[in-house]
Image 1 (tube, rainbow, N blue to C red):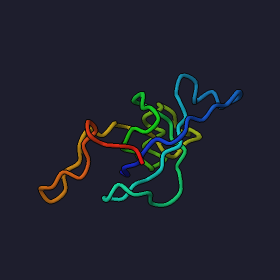
Image 2: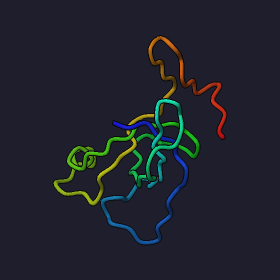
Image 3: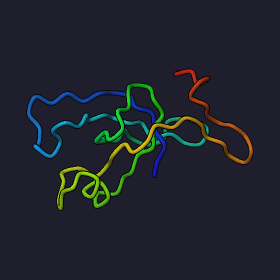
Length: 102
């Protein structure tokens, strides 16, 4: 699993039927200092995340297939949770209620 921030909503006028009823969002992975790390990831949203929220993403295609209830879904990443708080070594490094977007 990876922690990331939702940065964009993806709008598609035509998309695979496997995505019907699910939002597609671009998520920027973050390191433990809440700084950008690597490239944005296209994710199927399973939790109703919104722009600027910190989320947990799963980047294993077979697990995403299981979530979608399909043998072969055309996706390899999914948003599976919205992060409220992160504590590392007894130090709070993220709290949703006080986090300011840079």
